[in-house]
Structure formats: structure tokens, C-alpha cells
Image (cartoon, rainbow, N blue to C red; front, side):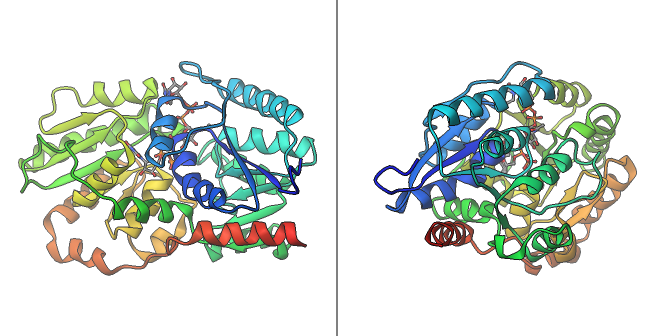
Length: 373
Ligand code: UD1
Ligand code: UDP
């Protein structure tokens, strides 16, 4: 509904990475007097979502609060579809902005599509080309890109993927990834972090995160075995693991590493703390999408705990090394980074393919043009 002629834009977020990556765009849109901007939180995540939004000074205008403990994909899919649909019926919108590849993203996009509301997909066009990895995210992003109206592709390669699927090029904009906007903004305001208080200042530190569904069970156990072996082999090494709130992942990791020395478990870190730990670490081991992009921008090596990646730019730039969840391969690549100084240092001048910190401004311009024409 155009109030005073202003297009109404609804930005939907559901999980931590959506919050971090949509935040700079929400702030940029809100600076623009042409738009009426509202934020809907699906509540697929609770504390992890509000923690991420808070850092950027954003409060959701509406929160569907759909999260359940150990929730199923069916629950998230249907609850978000119904919740966003009911909101749109009561509050008609001129455009819906969704981000990435979560179940919130898919269901919210579908609710918009059912009401013929244009859907703008931020971080469009990523493809692993394997529907089982990451699961269910590859399907989510492919499905959203079938029904979207505007596509904000973070890289030329993502735009090429859309073109290869027949998406009209006039609706695709290569913008850079908004995560780099979030990262640069946070680096500017960097303060001290108390998270590392137990880690000796001179100790080699590695940051690890893991949460992907396709790693639950055996793969995650193998990753933890590799971590345990590395701690035994390198007596000065410390590993910091901010645990995801998901009990399936949290219990598996803490159980597998119980009694290991020099492991620091933390709750999910506030974004500035997490950025500070990334900066302090020698390298990162992670199956996260966003962390791969941030590590690349920080020129930190990242051992990607996945079998394949929808972010080949990190591999081409050389900051990412795809190690999967094979214990030996993880140990070998981590050992090389821990023992070969020139190899470690060579990461400091690799490419930065994910953006320049101005993605949000480009997206806002494209939305302005859409409403002008
Ligand atoms: C979800 C996304 C994944 C994304 C990840 C980011 C889907 C299918 N998965 O996975 O793409 O990479 O978020 O972290 O969309 N929980 C809490 N508090 C929170 C958040 C989660 O307690 O703030 C617990 C709950 O028990 C919840 C469980 O974690 O049921 C799983 O959450 P869910 O969003 O379904 O899956 P994630 O693994 O977080
Ligand atoms: N992150 C954070 N605190 C943490 C762990 C991660 O703020 O303790 C941030 C990280 O910097 C990145 C995002 O969360 O921007 C990644 O989220 P996650 O790994 O949960 O999801 P993915 O990117 O894999 O979808």
C-alpha cells in the first residue's frame, strides 16, 4: 500500500545470518525518505536473531515468534508461510525483501508470490548444484529464484548462474555481498573483547564454527576428532568454538571434545566479538556461509568444512580451502597453516571477491529505479 505515495517495503529476517546481512540494507533503506520500511522477524531464531539485530540498533516491527525447540523443517515452512501471509493480508506491501536461503526466506517469498507482491532476493544466484548440500538451502535458493522479481547477486558468478537459468538480465544487479558492508561497519567501531581473556596473548588461536544439517552425526564427529588430534599434536594451540544454539549440534560438539585441553566454548558471540576473534585467529575452520565471506575479506585462511561450496569465489581467491569433513584432510591442512609461516602469510594479500562495502547502496538505487519506471 502506498502511504502518501511512498512504497511500503517489508524486510524479512529469520535467522542470525539474515539479520547480519540485511541490517546494513535496512539501515540504508530507512535513511531514504522515499520508502516506508518495516522489518518482520519470523522468529525462526530467537536469541540469535535479536542478538544480531541489536548490534545494528534494529528492532523488528513485528515478530512471529515461531521457533520451537528442535523444530522441524515442516514446522518452520508452514508457520512462516501462514504468519507472513496473514501479516501481508492485514498490511499490504509494495515489495518484500528476503535474504539468502533459509526456510524463512523460501516461505516468506512464497507468501509474497501468492499475493502477487514483487519479491526482491538479496544474495541471489548462489548455487552448489547439489540439492543435498547444503540441505535444504540449495533448494530454498533455487526455488526463491524461480519466483522473485528483483535479484541482487553478490558476485558476477552468481549473476551468471541466474542468467544460465533464464532469468531476465534486466532484473539482475551485481551488488557485492551486504555482509561486507556489515563487516566494515563493525570493524570501524571495533572495541576490546573480553571473550579471549583465558587465551594467552601469544598463543596460536583457531576459531571454529559448525552447524550445517548435512554434517550432523558422523561428519561432525570426524571434525571434532580432527580438532582433538590437533590439540594433542600442538601443545600451544588454542581453539575457540562459539556454540550454535541448536542442541543437536551443541551437544554433539561438547560431547566429542569433552576433556580436551585449550578448547574455549562460548555462547553465540555478539557480532563485534566474533569479528574480533576472527581477526585474532591464525585461521578459521567453518561450515558457515557468511564466515567464508568475512574471512576472505579479512584475508584469513578458512578451512571450509564442506564437501562442496556455493561460494567458489573464496576458492578462486585462494582464501578458502575446501577440506570437507575428512579427519586426515582437516589435520593436514590445519597442520600446514600451523607450521608453514610463508604459507600462512601468503593469505594476507589474496583477492576480495565478495564486495567493497557498498552493496546496500547499490541495492537501494536499484529499488529506487524499480519504483521510478
Ligand atoms: C538455520 C538455517 C540455516 C542457517 C542457520 C544459521 C534453515 C533450514 N536453516 O539453521 O540455513 O545457516 O540457521 O545459523 O533455514 N535455536 C535456539 N535459539 C536460537 C536459534 C536456534 O534455541 O536463537 C535452536 C532451537 O532448538 C531450534 C534449533 O536451534 O529448533 C534449530 O534452528 P533452525 O533455524 O531450525 O536451524 P539452524 O540449524 O539454526
Ligand atoms: N556469527 C556471530 N557470532 C557467532 C558466530 C557467527 O555473529 O558466534 C556471525 C558470523 O560473523 C556471520 C554469521 O554469524 O556473519 C554466520 O551465521 P551462521 O554461521 O549461523 O549461518 P550461515 O552463514 O552459515 O548461514
